[in-house]
Length: 314
Image: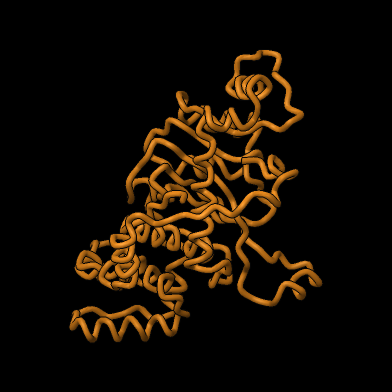
């Protein structure tokens, strides 16, 4: 709903209240989020040390699966690199597993070029993709020091959400990268076909529409045009249809007709991301920060799959 829609009578509107209807199941899911076996699985232990390939050069001591599991546990438990190394050694000792834990320096170096699995393949795929972007603070000096010395204080996290609240694509960029510019990279991460692409007004324009249609020709694009938007000369694009519908029925009716209200799934995903993992990146360099954002998105998908609250308005 547009923020100014109820501006004249906002003081008379009481705050909506909601009730969770599946609290028992959601309570169990919340407890499972702290279960280390969810992230440190038997499959990860079995493939902890890679097999010899017979190629020239020194083989890697730890597999990509080992690095991914270690970084997952680090993000979930909010541990610095050295504390994470000590925590993992304690877990392996208690489990009596015949594996060794990589040291903090190895983890830091391997996270630069750690292969990133397609998020859309790793979790339940959907037919709807909702994109949004948010800012994340960078590890280092405070905001006053960064502003004084003209240091880039933030990174921008671009994410794509499906109708099942799963993150199917994510990309971390510098602040100078606009929201529409990151759309092609997000679409490249989605291996399954989509039927609907949704975003806020920041994604309005021909570049985004063309990028979506190049990858998914039959996709429906739902992006609200601005108030000053006019119909193109051709008059046969999806954007033209949205402009004509809004002019005829109004913006609120257009939202209900197109299902644009589902866009709050992306805002909820951003809220969950910052609430669980914080709004500050631990890594200092951009390559490690990209891996950190991808690992956090993967961990958030695991938590979402364990259980989500089902709330109703009362």
